[in-house]
Image (cartoon, rainbow, N blue to C red; front, side, top):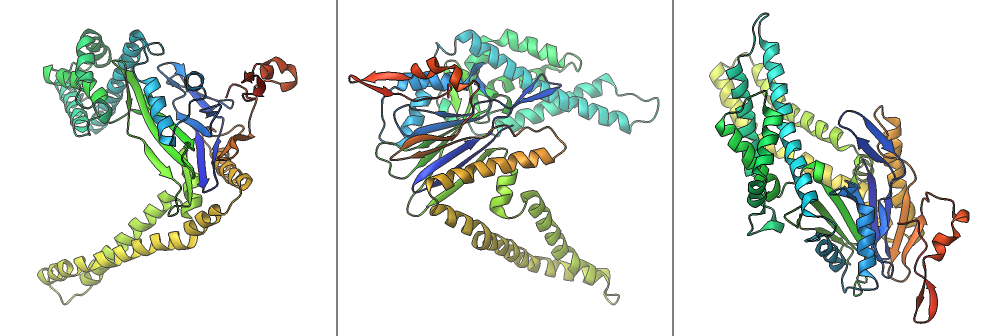
Length: 447
C-alpha cells in the first residue's frame, strides 16, 4: 500500500510519498519501509513524478525505468507539462529493449492465470455455500459443480464484455492476436486452474474469450495496475499542472494505458489537494467526515423518511388495507424531496464550512508551508495505519519535494540509503561540464 499526496496553488506544487512497500507470496505479506516513489522526471526542468501501486512494469522497477527515461530526455524541454507525460508514454510504447517479447508473453500469461484463479476462487466459495445448505450425508453432484462453474464463468465474461474498449488499442485486434498466438499456453492454464470442475465447451470458450478481453477492454486488473503522477511546469506553463496516468502491461509491444486525467491551477481553480492510493484519512480531513460513516448516515435517514409514514399509516386502525395501501402510495413520492434536500444541504455545508476554507487557506500558502501540508497528510495516513490492527502498509520516511517555476525541483525531505560522508565519489559523479563551466547536475541518491 502507498500514500501519496499532491498539493498545488498558483505558486508551486508539493509532492509527498511514504516509503512503505508490501511484498507478498500469495499467503504472507511483508512490509519494507525503504521504497523510493518520488523522482525528478527531468534533471534540467521543473517536472517530478510519483509512482504508486505496482513498483515495477514487467519486472523492471519503475525507479530504473524513470531514470533511463530521464537520461534519454536529457536537457529537452517541452512547451507544456502534458508533453512530458506523452513523451514518457512514447518511451514505454514499442520499447522492445526494455520489454522483449518473451517477457511480454510471460506476464500476459501470468495475468490471465490470475484472472482465472479469481474465478476459480468464486466457484469454490459458491460450492462451499451449497455444501453448508445440504443435510448431513448429502453431497453436491459433479454435474452441479460443472453448472456452478459455468454460471460464474459466463457471468464474469458478461461483466468484461460490458466494459468499454481500451482507447489505446482502438482499431486493433491485439488481444485476439495475442490469445491466438498463445492458445496452447492458455489452454494449459485452463486445465491447470479449472481441471477439478471440468468446464464444458461453452465455459471453456468463455475462458478463452476472457483471455482476449483482459487486453482489449479498458479495465486494468489490480495485479497489473501502475499509477503515475507527473507534476510541474512546461516552458509556457505559469501555473502548475498535474497529469495522472493509469497503466497496465505491455502487449504485442504496445503499452496499455488509460487517457490521463489532468488537474491544473488556474484563476478559477486556485488550489488542489489530491491523494493517491491509500487516501482514507486525507478524504476524511477534506470532507470533515468519514465517507463510509456518511453513507451509512444517509442510508439511515432515507430509511427513516421512507419507513416513518408507513408506520404511522399502519397505526391508524380506522383504515382498511386498501386505504392504507392507497395512502402509502400517495405519500411515498413526497418523501423524495426531503431526501434530495438533505443530501444537497449536507454537500453544501461541507463545501462552505469545511472543505472550502481549507482550499482557500492553501491558495495563500508559501512554498515551505505547501510542502508541510503534503507531508502532514501522508503522515496522517501513516498514523491511522499505525493505530489500526492490520499491517502498517503506510509508513517509513516521507519524501517531500516542491516544484516552482523559478526554483525548479527542490527536495524538502529525502531519505538516503547510504551515509553521505562515506560516498563523496557518488556526488562527484553528478558534477558535469556544461559549456566549459562545471555545474552540478544534481545531488541525489538515485532518485
